[in-house]
Image 1 (tube, rainbow, N blue to C red):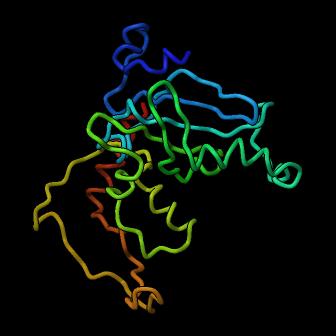
Image 2 (image 1 turned 180 degrees about the vertical axis):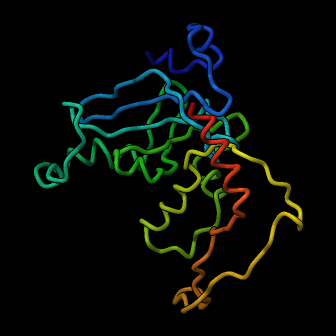
Amino acid sequence: MYQWYCQTDHQIRAKDNEYTTPSDAKLIRRVVLTPTTTLFYPPEFQFSNRMLRNFDSNYALRVSFRDDDGKKLSASANYSDAALLEFAVTMPMIEGIKICARHYKFLAWSNSQIRDHSVWMYAEDNKGNNADTIRAWMGDFSITKSVSKYMARLGQCFSQTEDTVKIPLEHRYVITEDDIEGGVNPVTGKPYCFSDGIGKMSRQLAENVSIHIYYLNL
């Protein structure tokens, strides 16, 4: 099993002709960590997101934390045996996990993963990208002091997205408007931006997107 996990995506697909990766998806390796063991699962199709489009999915890993009966670790476990969570959750999150010659380290989690007790990990690839450099690439969120807000911002990079219609980035197609701001951030002294990342579209464009999605789901 360890040797199997060291193979490339191409080698995995070559061993099973049924693996035909859609153009908008990647094969992602999966691991489940329990208090007593590490369970390896076959790669699973993951729809494209910002991170997978820019980095090598062969070095990405989805890690889930479970109890030995397969259920989610309950909050009460922290009170019954703190050492259990230390070994099963805290240590892997801080130190990462080693599989063959790769050392996977905690990268981030998506908004849906946090509800499922799962995270993304990444091992240093052939281009020198690792969990630290990828987080730096995602953006500068150093002024965000809340852990939950910080992770929510990173999680945006893992939202599953799919191409619908393409819009030329020209002035006749794109209109830039002022942000809606107010209040003062006590850390930066700058006003809060309430419209950051928010956009509007024309009725015609919205109809084109809806039609495209309709035919994709047929």
